[in-house]
Length: 61
Image (tube, rainbow, N blue to C red; front, side):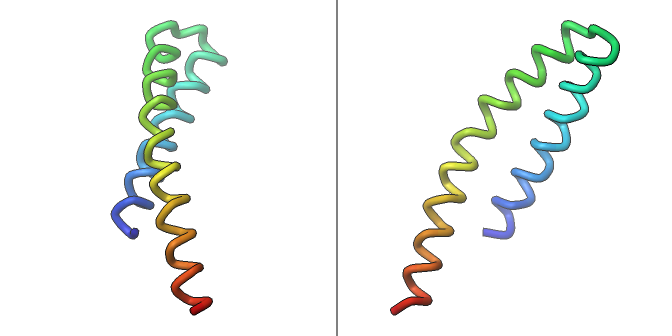
């Protein structure tokens, strides 16, 4: 789970940097990188949700 959180953190930081660069400077390449990062984040967040629910269910038992 720790590795997954590190991946999400790294990718989120990259996404925010590129998204801000597109917004502030109109950098089209940064916009493309931000969109790619958002697509890469989706499966990681779904995996986090699954692991988080499993951990919560294991504690409840």
